[in-house]
Amino acid sequence: MTRYVGVDLHRRRSVIVVLDADGTELWGRRIDNSPVTLGLEIEEAGPEPEVVLEATWGGYWAADVITETGGRVHLAHPLGIAGFENRRVKNDRVDARLLADLLRMGRLPESWIPPEGVRHQRELVRYRRKLSQLRAGLKAQVHVVLGKEGLLPPINRRGVPRSSPMSTRDRWLHLSEDFTNRLALPGLGSSRWFRRVTGTDVKREKGEQRRLNSRLTERRQLPREEPNETS
Image (tube, rainbow, N blue to C red):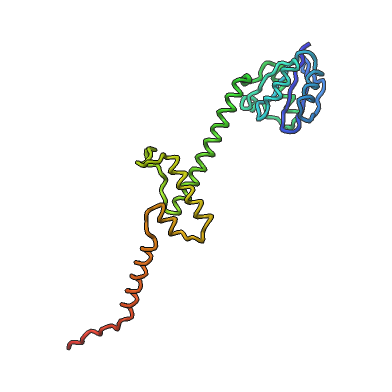
């Protein structure tokens, strides 16, 4: 006689409910999640049981354990079973029984369980996307720091390196090394670093600014000429 097992899978604990072909609940219990514990519960349900669990995060390990134990795995679609959840009482045990009952009646909306090779490729794509987002965020932070110092990155808008004997990577490394030296040795002053990177003589500009300020101060101190009053 075929038995139907509903598993309400969670992160640390899960609830298992076993039904017979007539829909009678044989037993149900809560277990701590581990491959050994889940495998023993599936073996206790009988030979080749029909097992259903809802598609959720981290559920592939449970599907593999059920398959290795001899059960036939069914993956319930979360949106498909949402229409059957209009009930007064809702808890983990009721959810597990609902999954097993829908599977028994042949009304379970199922999802595709990808094989191990496809899962591996998906994980690689997801991980590469996360690394790409991390790289883009770090580049944006570098641009912010350079923008605060008035520096331009060594790449133009089209992504083509500017005309230089150094490659784009070498220019980035040179710029990064100069900026790091400036932060590590603040006693040397920022003008020397800024002049070396941008080619601007900061000291000369500061001297000209001081001379201009002194001239303006002298002009302010000169006595004002009163306008002649004409009758």
